[in-house]
Length: 143
Ligand code: SSV
Image (cartoon, rainbow, N blue to C red; front, side, top):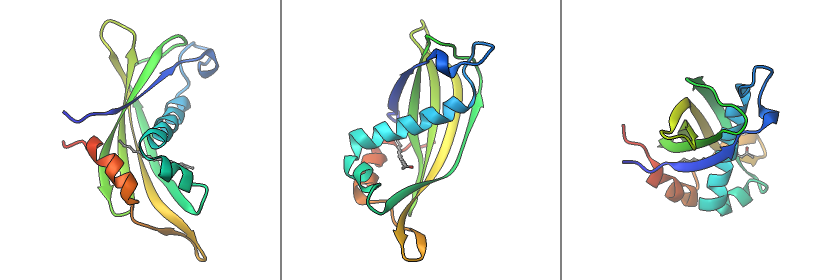
């Protein structure tokens, strides 16, 4: 089975709405936290290069919701690689409500990013850096 990169987040009251469940947009924010932690842990050089001309541009994202999360829950994002092609990378996210007898799949998301560099003519595509490619490949989901 493909290993997933796991990122855990305790849900806060600040993230819930009047009804008591998590506002939909936070799920996408957590995708951002998850990918940042991945870079920090597995490709720190790539994270550092983001302030030095290299750019990872988000080209798309989305989320489907199956269940609710409320303050006090701990959500675990399980991120896998679904595409690695030239300058493009795509990821899938399974969101599990944990700390219950059987972890519950509450949402599923996806996003795609493109590696770019800031040249004289603006942003230009560049191949996925070798160190990032190496860090990503163990997480490739074969479906
Ligand atoms: C400044 C900014 O916008 C940062 C973007 C960071 C993008 C990180 C992408 C990481 C992709 C990781 C994929 C892992 C798949 C298992």
